[in-house]
Image (cartoon, rainbow, N blue to C red; front, side, top):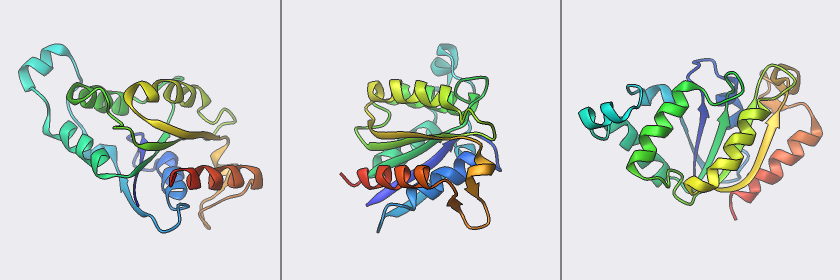
Length: 175
C-alpha cells in the first residue's frame, strides 16, 4: 500500500507535516511518500491566468502524485480559520484538471496548531468539502496544542486517547 502524506501548509517547519508523516507511518507495511507543497508552487489562480497558462505542469504533477497513491493523509494548517493560501491555490489549479481531485482515495484528514483550537475550523471545512472532490474520508482528527500533545524528540503522541484514535483511523485507510 502506498500512502501519500502532506501538510496543507507552506511552512518549512510545518507541525502539520510532522503530524501527517507520523500518522501515515502508523499504517503497518505501507510505503509512505511525504510531499512538500512548496515543490508545487504556481501563480495565483484566476480564469485570466488559466487562459494564459493553461494547466500548469506542477498542478498536473500534484494530481499525478495523488493518482499514484492508494490512500492520503493530509494535515491542514489553519490561517485565519481557513485553508492556507498556498494549499488553496494548488487545490484550485488541480481542480481545473479534474474536479475529483482526491480521485476516490481513502483519506485521513488531520489538523493541528500550537493552540488549543487544534485548527478545528479548517478541518471542519475540509472534512465537509472533501467528499465533493472525491475523497473517501475515513476519519478526521484534530490535535490541539501540538507542543503539549506531541513529543518531537520521540515522534509520538503524548495523549493516549488521541494516540488510540489516530491508530484506529490509520488502520481504516487499509479498508
